[in-house]
Length: 143
Image (cartoon, rainbow, N blue to C red; front, side, top):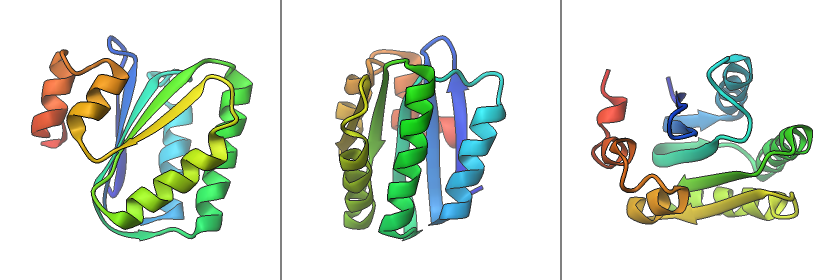
């Protein structure tokens, strides 16, 4: 799947990975699956891994729409949340910056964008945990 996720209750983290060509439908499907997943709890920290996106087929308006959805979720849950976005291209970084700008007024929602995995893991406080090691080596994604 181009958009997939894994939840880690012990670390209170959901890891989202995007691979290949990413469309708005892929992102919406991911959000729908997460909302229906009993293992996902609103307020979990999020690690968005965009390093393997080859084409981001999402418009700026769609990024703003996704930000509006996240604002709605945040207002509904009123739970603080940290999101680390790991990027490897100018296109994904620009989209992440637009997203962060759109949600920066949401109380308790902190979004940070990184090109370095170590900084992203430290931001979420999982750098010294086994999950951090799995994310570093990408063993998490081997099926």
